Image: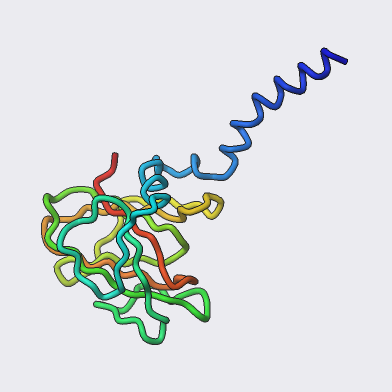
Length: 168
């Protein structure tokens, strides 16, 4: 009986971490640990869609979105929303501190367009999971040092958290 109890305790010790990893958050193509921490922070800045940021945010940013029929975009979203009732909007960023690869991570399911110099910027990589609580998608883009417009569409909720930074 004692032996069975010890075996059960050992199994629980081994399975506990494995079960925690089963949520999908460790299965992105690159680490999203920094973004998960930023999204969990209680002191995230919140802005309304359409605002211009004075600088690249240091952590995550919560954007309050507009209902789809009222949302304003710099250019038409490249993808039509998959849901009937959706939210969206834009955030303008100033000139980036330096050119290079930047990573944009979203907390929820959404389409993201990145616009720079009057045109869409194509991603150089993307990863997404529907089984990671609080993080849905991360996209990498090669951006120059000019201003950027981020636009999200097809969001089910009224707000979305976004993190923007060079990759780790």
